[in-house]
Image: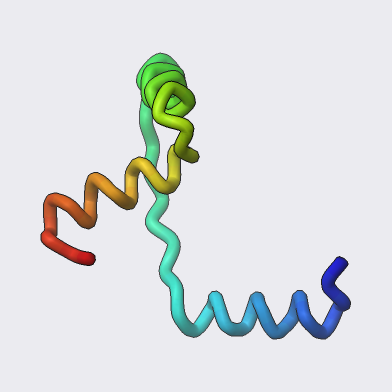
Length: 59
């Protein structure tokens, strides 16, 4: 289990290097997306990022 100082360092790193993108979808749409991701064996976050990166040609 990470120590408190490791957790602080991770939080500091994420704050400097990542940006959160809030996304709102209707509950029924989320359930469809979630079910599809479960079929693919991927987390919803990974699925959404892959779609965005593919659209923008980001590797």
